[in-house]
Length: 564
Image 1 (cartoon, rainbow, N blue to C red):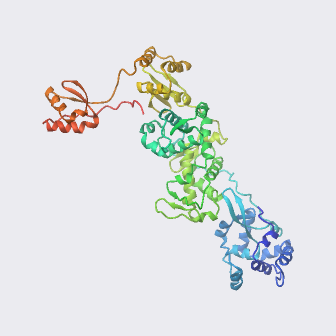
Image 2: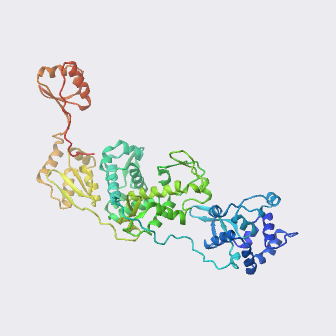
Image 3: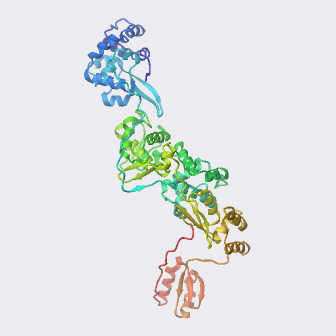
């Protein structure tokens, strides 16, 4: 990988350094201008016979350093080369000549630097401009044959690992929970000012509906909904873009998952580095990372995995460290990014902290977003493998099966809809209350859900038409109930309550004459009343004042939830 020609390299060398190079190549620099000295040096240094002679004069360590550089393609990151072969000191002409530093080099790298075998320059990498050590092509003519290795492409097979006993499959829950997210926005229209974290905290019913209720994953899905332009702020509230949302809901499973993965892959506003739990990056304004680079690096690595085989996560991270350690920042930036250890507060500077920064980030991406979005399955003992979707996305397998496609309307108004029917489930969530999530979702038509549907201009006839469109014959009783509700509204209410029963009507009259009266919802009979659960402690205190110790049977049977 040529950076500059020998002439260009010599032109950019400090005059004092140029004179040192000339002496090593047995060219007298006395009374020669810079240009004249370069003109005298060039034919000498480009002579293959002279190069062979000077190569033979190098010590074993200098030869090893030069051989390493040639095999690497003629250039290496400066920091990597110096870490292995010693520091190259950048000093002024006065110190160089007064201390005659070339006589006591710090190591093989500086020895080659003083002899004019290697030079420093900058090349543009995906992570930015990076300083490299290079050997000009003209200096390689007289060197012994060395097999030049191409730049690491990370294409060879990776060692597999034993299958784990316990597996956490990614499945297709990313698409399922994203559909739930869209239903939530459509039905609730939350405030545009609320953050994903605030929504998570304030809507416990939403959390119960998610197949994978993990806060960080929820935040990512919420971010992707905005990235895909499905959620928009209108009059201080969040609404769905109907066209974009419908297109995603009606797409095949493979395309739904692909859309989510690629929205994350290409996002510059979701910064994974700032979500690694063991790190605390500081946005000082003096540095900036590109979150897309680590994702691209890992996806390229995953493309080398064999579908069905398991791999050790530390081995995968080690592969990247060995072949592409500067995947997200240049060597120089290892000392300029402000990242603290979350536990100790120490700054993690220098390449020696690669495992704690780059390694931790790669681990987070594998066990976090790439798992959450369905690309990889995880196993105990730090194992990972491609999921069916991951293999298909990387061109290594067929698309995953759609999953359960059932769509059933039961006599009691309960609706069962398979996870694969995301468009239908989104529509059902507009007119029915959620009961359960899984490969089959269950909803039930209630007075509350009908009121919500009416708020969206969905009346009973439109609901019945929707069922008929899918060849679902609504039970006659349900059809009559929907029509009657449209005419009369809610006529029956079912709720949980505390019932106070007394043996003497006088005791209930005394209770109603006290401040406890405000906690009595309804008097059922002279000897029974419904008590508000939140006021039971106050009612109990009044009963004690009246000289009565109540027998409490407050345990209730846990039935299935009636809604979010």
